[in-house]
Length: 220
Image (cartoon, rainbow, N blue to C red; front, top):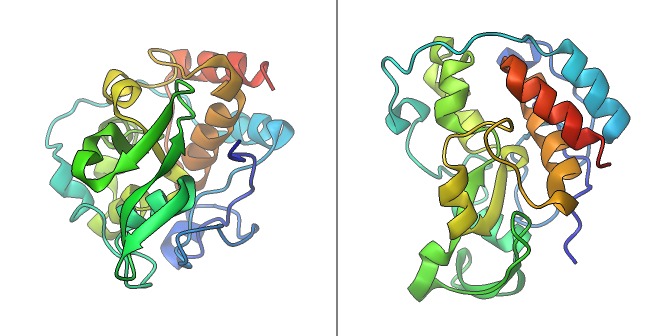
């Protein structure tokens, strides 16, 4: 069973620290990089962080496009590998690579639906990299006001990314916790991660999403 209860290192980028994120945490396992990423804590930490996250009505989608977050899957940690392959290497087991970076096969125990998947690059869409706090939702909850560099940090932050089965990821799409939930056994960790991203990046949440997150924390 993959372990998802790992406290990840919070952002050390000065502009983001100025926004109030913590500088505590440890290096990520897997991926081989040193990219900063959002805080992931235990239930008590998550509840405390959620109490500090602003509740707001979403702004309109006006002006949104994926390009607003910079090129997809940058090498944000400067380890020579793009973010997608870093996350595949981190989250899959029995990983095989071509050259230094490109993951060509592995096994995934999907956290969202619990399905075991044999990943091959020939059928890469079976395993997708999900933004736990969706980028379109983040745009509506404050990211439209950010500089592109900060949006790129969020889009490539390992603390906001999971390798998951494509089917539930498509169902999740840009929905927040009030509209979509993973399997019950993963709801605690999902809520902790979502809250950690919101808190680190000072993103707001809707009232309905806050209620849903509190309910999921009750599963911890």
